[in-house]
Length: 72
Image (tube, rainbow, N blue to C red):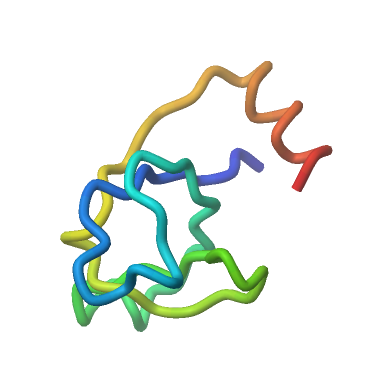
């Protein structure tokens, strides 16, 4: 199963939790998606909900997905 990743494009109001231009692992959450939110593993190492407008979804090559899965 391919993982989902996003890049933070705005951290307004979440300076301590999110870094702009950083790649984050996004955990699928259908309920959050219905409320325009995404579940992200943030700087604390825990997953929290954030407004989806703070992120840009990116597609990564399968080989990189495998490497990131081993690191995370």
